[in-house]
Length: 124
Image (cartoon, rainbow, N blue to C red; front, side):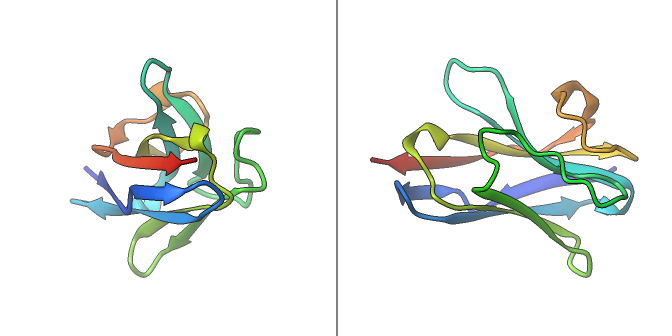
């Protein structure tokens, strides 16, 4: 079974950029949709963006549209989240999740495998 492993979180100033990485441990993302979620203190887990198992569609939340981009490196079995124009309200723990043969559904309950999360803090 694949186990997502996130990295790249940290502290960044408002307006800055940060790229998170998600590695496939113990397996491959080849048959999985891979999505990024985040959870701020006291809030529900929020869907951000997904790379479906196949197809060109990239489901994305309105809150990050135009600022966040998902990309993949199939040779390295890595999925990235590039975050631009960051705002203090983007502060949260960011999670990578995998859904076998998934299409990028925004419901977190669809995802079988979750990483441990990486903290992103945006200072004003």
